[in-house]
Length: 188
Ligand code: IMP
Ligand code: MG
Image 1 (cartoon, rainbow, N blue to C red):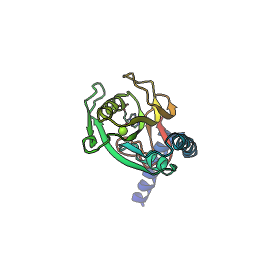
Image 2 (image 1 turned 90 degrees about the horizontal axis):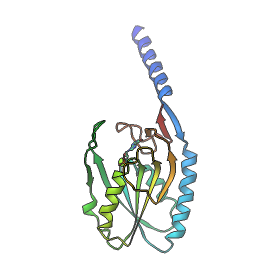
Image 3 (image 1 turned 135 degrees about the vertical axis):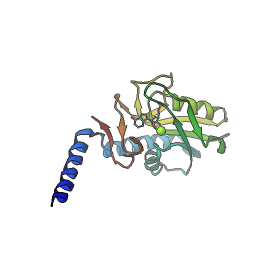
Image 4 (image 1 turned 90 degrees about the vertical axis):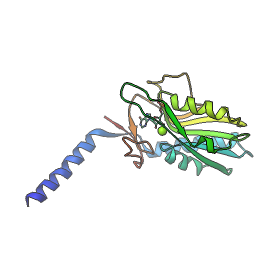
């Protein structure tokens, strides 16, 4: 009996905590609408061309999966992984994995990530891809958070600008969790 009470209490507590901390920032319908509009633009501008999408894992996988299914021309998909080991005060060096395995020479590349924050990830990867001599390079992020930008880099396209929130869901994680949430959410 006591065990059952404690179990129900813990369930109730976790629900209260969850409700108080996670809020929907961008609902799935809005994301879908923007993706359809963006894919229309890419469909027109790359008509007759073969696009090579390079996605930055893991955060971009949901965004890219939805975007790709709106494309009219066949597109190739490649992935790389980026991580930087940072503490609260010190920014660690960015490690890029998998780019050396790709042959992007002469390709029309679309580099996609979930979010641009300080800008270091995009800025570094763009320089690395440019040195691989693609025919063209365009960059797109789902979210642009400008408040903490540290490098002078703007992606060619972004679908939403957001304020200085830490967000999770739709592929983005908080401590590796939350990527499966269907909406972009923020911690209050
Ligand atoms: P940047 O190098 O600071 O622009 O950071 C870009 C990377 O940091 C993204 O690819 C994300 O993985 C991660 N990131 C930045 N802000 C957030 C956030 O609010 N939620 C989840 N991941 C984030
Ligand atoms: Mg990322």
